Length: 194
Picture 1 (cartoon, helix red, strand yellow):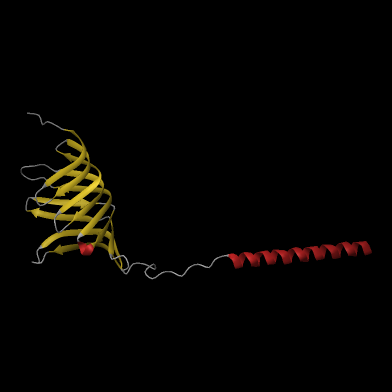
Picture 2: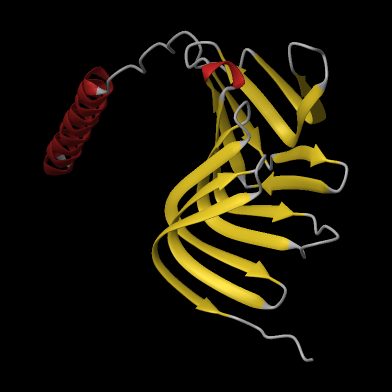
């Protein structure tokens, strides 16, 4: 009987010792876990945002210069940049000519003077009486809306009247309706039936 008590006492002491070690281990782990850093100013969210909107940019004379539409826009004051999701830019050059630029996202900086369109950028020119529809696709495009110009160093694909051009790099002057391809130009032209 006495042997049973000694065994039970030893087991109890061993169990108590294991519990103390487990508690000490948990306390040491809790002490070594770093506390989360406080959120920096501006990280809590945008200063303001808009959903499903259209903005008309006007010149000094009050005449419309271009439109920008997007599914979402946000402004963070620390970055001084507007971020857009699914932006669409529209430039109406003349009554018979307009240009549109769409992308997955865009960043507008320098008080609206620079718009960086990124992700599946598509540039379209509406066909006129003298020329057909024109469509260009690239990965990114820097648009300077005041100058009505755009440029890209990325690969570009151009389609017009069944013809296709591929190149690397693009300079676009929407006011003059001039497209300049920079490097590695390859083309396939469709000759209309006579």
